[in-house]
Image 1 (spheres, rainbow, N blue to C red):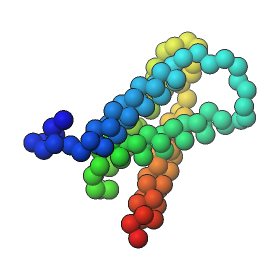
Image 2 (cartoon, rainbow, N blue to C red):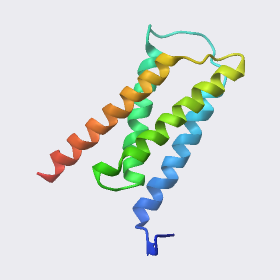
Image 3 (cartoon, helix red, strand yellow):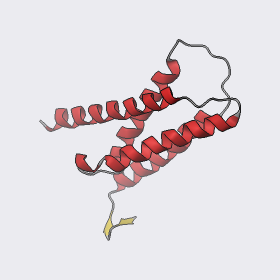
Image 4 (cartoon, rainbow, N blue to C red):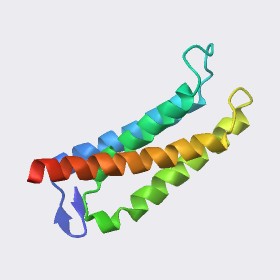
Length: 124
């Protein structure tokens, strides 16, 4: 696979495929009907936090670049969250919630923190 006239490393290609697969899977899970409410109060928000932290870390692996260039990843994943909430509101059996978007944004920040902590930990 070529990108900007150079060949991408195989691991980058694998991470990109995994990132796309993750985006599709998360959207599918967000749009299917949920059976029962079980769990605890705030479970949905915690799930959003963990999912978006994970998507950020996967995205950084899929599109390696300098930290300063992470803005497109942030923006893309935020817009992905907005689309998810919009589509949930259109289903009739799921609801659109602003607090889910807040949890998504906090998840992105958590993913960024975890990635920076991990990189600093392994590099010295």
